Image (tube, rainbow, N blue to C red; front, side, top):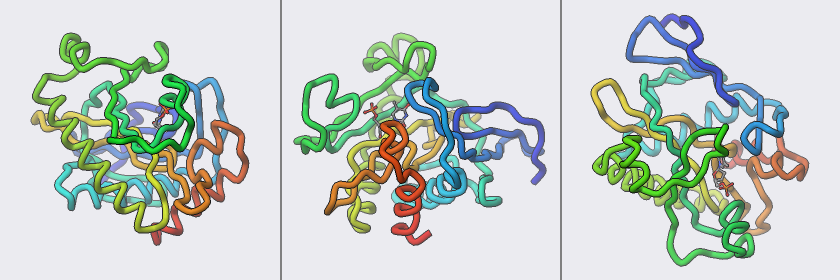
Length: 235
Ligand code: TMP
């Protein structure tokens, strides 16, 4: 597999073309941003951890019946993935109140929710990733009704499987963000990444934060937190 020209550089990953028109290579960086890129920094070794961890979790999702972009891990930081057009939505599930949910509704962080919540944000940094209603999504043609139903169903499955998996290693899955992509034959599959950049993960006993909130909120020991999750996953 030949790595050809760079197609795109995001905040945490670069994407390259390959000699197969249906496959891309993603290359995970150590760069970290928060607040739509306003806060910039770096988390040493993050790219390696997120690459491995995301591939491991994507494989678990495949086994649970959720199709993903994952094809093959190529190196510490590089993974071969299916070419998709990203559906410009951040799909967020919450099991416990935290972050913007706590702020928006005035609910204390750590409050258990009576059911998992599902919300969509428009993926657009310039607009600050605004929340978007399902009727807005279909009205704007970002996804059809059927695609959105499929995305919602897959997302709730991801929550169920991920929550149970993390519970088994003493971690509470507070919330997470995932993204979906569309293949050239129109299939919607799980894309982007699942990592401590995109999930809130709290130690089940101590409630210590083991995710990117340590960077966002300047809590210190950022690398240690990523390494801890990596180690608990046995990676
Ligand atoms: P929020 O509480 O800030 O809305 O975040 C909800 C979840 O989404 C949390 O697990 C962090 C994740 N997230 C991202 O992955 N990317 C983002 O740009 C934001 C704002 C949140």
